[in-house]
Amino acid sequence: MDFFAQQARVRGSSRRLVALFVLAVVAIVLVIDAVVWLSLGQHAAAGETARSNLPLLLGSTLLVLAGIGGSSLFRIMSLASGGKAVAEGVGAVPVPPDTRDPALRRLRNVIEEVAIAAGVPVPDIYLMADEPGINAFAAGYSASDAAICVTQGCLDHLSRDELQGVIAHEFSHVLNGDMRLNIRLMGLLFGIMVLAIVGRQVIWFGSGRSNRRDGGGQVWMIGLALIAVGYIGYFFARLIQAAVARSRESLADASAVQFTRQTDGIAGALKKIAILNAGSGLQVANRHEVAHMLFGEVGSFNALFATHPPLMQRIRALEPGFREQQLAQLAASMADAARAPAAAPDESPRAAGVPAAVLPPLLPAAMVGGGSANAPFQHAAALHQAMPPALGEAAQQPESALALMLALALSLQDALQPAQRHIVADAFGDDVQQAVQALVGELAELPPIARLPLTALAFPALKQLSAGRQQTLLGALDALVTVDGRVDINEYCLARLLRVQLLEARQPRSAPIDGLKKLPACRASVILVCTIVAAAGCSDEAGARRAWLAAMQQAFPGEAIAWVPPPRAWQRPFETALDELDGLMPVAKELLVQCLASAIRADGVVSVEEAELLRVICASLHCPVPAQAAA
Image 1 (cartoon, rainbow, N blue to C red):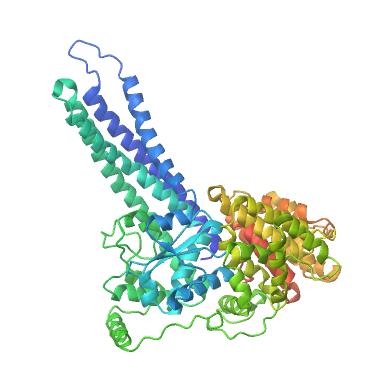
Image 2 (cartoon, rainbow, N blue to C red):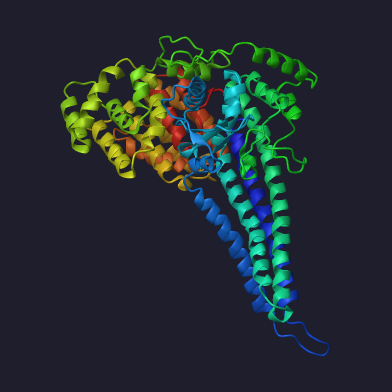
């Protein structure tokens, strides 16, 4: 039940949704056309021929289609800014990056660690402060414009592990491509519901008619039909919404377990929803609009309208031996804990539960076939803790985050630094250049493997820069990394990652959707990308060739392919190849990532260069960094 299989299921859900929605719209059009024909059409008397009703029915059809389509498009366009618009639409408020509230600090730390483990930028973080129920949702068109929103109930009632389980569930929606489908569902439901709103207006108009002769009766009939069809259509649209959502929520629970490598967290959160009076309910007026994207049900529904499987079914899927009677025991223990003095959670930068140790320049140990079951999260937490506090603070504000990215691109060679300082001063002025220099000393304490995770932490602040300033930053990074006439892998990965994610965040709706290509259709691009990754991890050509052969045997088994060393100017061909490979179908992307993992672990060591290249490749392919190379 991995990311790629789930992504394929989401595509199937999307197709079914479109098919069902088309059928619903066709039925609505036919009903409205029938009512219009009965009330306004020309009916033949005995022995007479009625005038053609075709223009009337054609006009009715076009008006209904334009109403539904236009309303749906309007609602989807109103959410064009992605996750932020959805979160603010339900009254959520952003969580400040420099918050001193221990509960909010814990929330930020958990979300940042999950983002580092998944290899995606940190999403915008929102809180529904007036909601006592335990609930959460993720919204947006892609990982680059995602927002994760939690209720106050999550902060008040969940332990750190339980909060991590809920956040991992929401990240699975981010990674699996559910968010784009969720926004479309919001638009389609709105489009159908608008018919009922128009019907009320038509009746109001008809009530102004003095008598049936003025057409008042016919107008009333059409208005009533619009109201009836609108609500009936909305009824069936909600059924579609619920059916699609239930299947995806079950998979998201399983994905969260696969992601965190433990069931206690998410199962514990579900048990507390079952125990607490507030459950997972929401009080906000438009809660039904976002019901299909929430962690739990927003209220009590008939099974047909439930957007989630029953709570006990979800709990037993995670803990097969769990009995409903055990909820009473848990409720008693929670009551005892509530009577005891509450200690504020310690969420200082060094208190995330993993000792701050010297980090090896590796991805999680699972990447090379070893390590504990929860290695990705342990490694992400250790990376998070290993970052100097000054760098963490710099990543929180737009201008200081900009200076931080420029500082990351500076060379360690003294001979190149004067030219690089000149580039920064020309692009941004002396003040920024001095801020960059002030960060250089702090960066010396940063483990090399933490460079790109630090970029992920800075991403929410970088998104707040104006489009022009973002473009100037990307241009300055390109100039900085090529100042010596060559580009090393670390420098390239920083510039490429920021370019991909910032451009996508600026135009959320343009984020690419799943492709249809198979691996053989992109043979040259696959070979080139595998060649560059293999060469990055080996100091000699023989080792690079062995790593490359391991990838080729998995990608194109039985084929004889000649090894060709990567070109000296590899960056542009590499980017062209990545753009083509992003058009692969999910199953082909899965195979490609497995091939790259085979090349990386061929010598049993994951270098910083290999780790950063893999992170950039996965970002370009819109898939998470694999937790296990053998998966």
